[in-house]
Length: 141
Image (cartoon, rainbow, N blue to C red; front, side, top):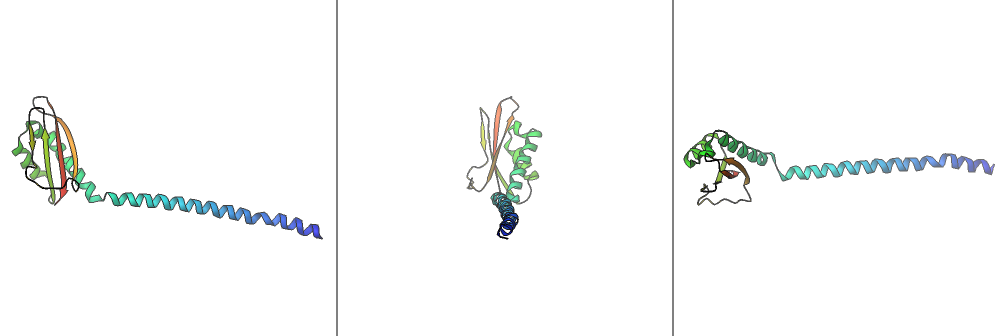
């Protein structure tokens, strides 16, 4: 009779260990999913959509200026008037064009914080085949 009890306890005693392992694996998977979701949520707060949009708008505007040949002509009045025509309402752009023999900086006496603005640069070739760089800063007004 004693031997029957021992054999019964061994036969049914392993089910608890399997349920414990199953629950530990499930908790491990849940913690991994939570950690990944917290990571992506924290990254989404670092760059809101409006800020990304401002950066993309500035990149697109200077691509249009380059495509139309205004950057290569190096005429500040044409560039400024075209910027005012293309740029959506609510955005402000300052730029600096550097070529080997000339530099134009639209910032002048403007006081803006480069930390609050989004910056980029575009490399282009002017009409004299010099490599030039247009650096730009954009922010929401």
